Length: 150
Image 1: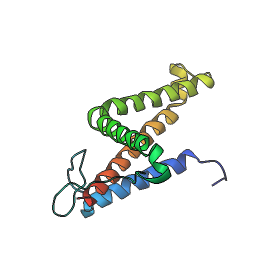
Image 2 (image 1 turned 120 degrees about the vertical axis):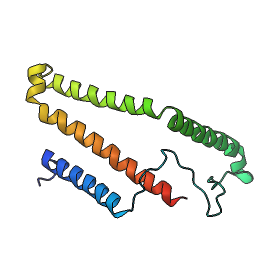
Image 3 (image 1 turned 60 degrees about the vertical axis):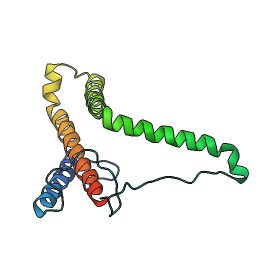
C-alpha cells in the first residue's frame, strides 16, 4: 500500500474483516442474541453501579468545584436524554450529513447529475456499505461492553 493513501479495496477488505469478525463472534456465542439498546451498569448484587468524578470541595479548588459539578451533571443528563429519547433523530441526521457530503463531493467534481451519479456509483455504494458496517460493528461492540457491565 502507498504511504498516506488508502484505497477503496483496503477499506472494503477492512469492512469485510470487521463484519466477518462480528458474524464469527455471534456464531461462537460471544455476542448475545438480543440485547436492549440501553443497558444499565450494575454490580453483581444487581444494585446500580454509580460512576462519578472527583469534585473539589475544599482548598483552592472549592472556588470552581461547584461549577465543575454542575457542568458535569448537566452534560451527563443531556447525553443520557439524547441517547434515550433522540437516538433515531441523531442517526437520521448522520445519514443526511453523509448524503450531503457525497452531493458536495460530486458537485466539486462537476458530476452532480444522474450521469455523474452513475459514473461515481462505486463511491456512493462504498460509502453506504462502510457506513452500515461501521454502525453494525460499533453497535455490537457497545452491546458486548454493556453485557460485561452486568
